[in-house]
Length: 504
Image (cartoon, rainbow, N blue to C red; front, side, top):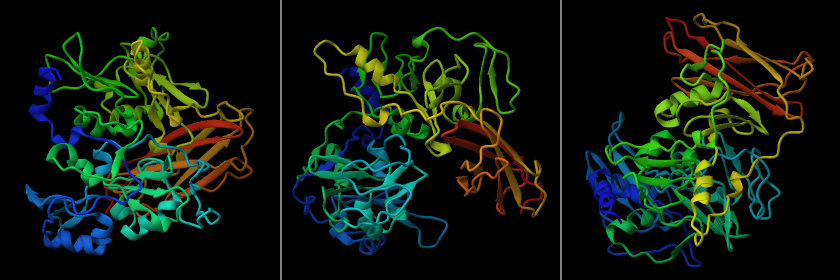
């Protein structure tokens, strides 16, 4: 490893962030009795006993360690944390090892289950080979809990303890694995949900740094151990669910920068600013900018006079919340329909809007890093084959725009009055689209983004959503987005309204 890279990593990065990799158990059970048996801190012991005990969580691999008032103890399969909170009893729960170990995948639409699993998104699965039920799609992360892991998911305490799934269930050899925010799960192919067990993510978090030798797991294809020196940079921006996983080790480039290729971007730290991280201009390398246009009349539009292009709609929201020009670069074209997606090219990335995903997850980065990685590969190198989830989604039957209008009945909401959002959808020929099912995402400070149930459009192509919002802040601006996709085409609309100044 180059000296500068060693020094840069040693200077300011927690060691835990350097070793994300995926694991699956071998045919034997997860490791047990690794090293000494360490005592459990009282609140941690209570948590362990209430959530399956050492039988599920594995044996402790280290004593309880306290840093800045937060106690941590790592077990074979999990890491339990305890700290003060607003309550008198404090907070005890699982650390998000799934995120920390880089196991998140980009969101997937709710669709048919992949072969070999029992999942059927958006409904209970009563006809699976194992007669397991409970598979469901999580809008928060854009992934489906596989029915084969439902029993273990519930036994551990559900989403409150396990977290939401951050990857789809996948088959490897004779096993099925799935990663969640806090744990990983594995079962043999065809086994009942009751036979699922946890992966040793706790051991994975310590293996490279504390010297533990853990038997009973192997590294899976495509998820090799890769240093992740940019983890502190990517995590606040959405982590590997946004940027994809790293395809290369960090390297020292000719310009003196530390660089690492991810699936959807190339990250680098310049020689003269080793603490800073940026993206290479992969979008600009695709060609010259499109012809300039004037500023948009849309209220949410951001106009760049330097390139003559607008950033609008969901792309504007994503742009403002993902580093803006410093990270994504300036827009080089207007948003345009590209197959089944809405896309827009920036200096560093290409954004696409996937209408099959929940609106807060629908903006994704195209895999420009993977393309660059393949192009850079030397004659003797073997490029990583494309992941199935990166393949283009087949376009809808009618790949055209429909007209979506959405507005709030009360632009400035009176006190103690429900808000009504009216949605109207028209076919390309101007006639009402009857029976359309809009997806509406509402974002408030207290609740974040949520997706209220919307009735299908009536004979006039209209649907009315009634919102009871008792927890708004005084004067708060509430944003809402409407997306539609179906046999008639695809469309999008954005709106907002203001809460009363005397809101409770």
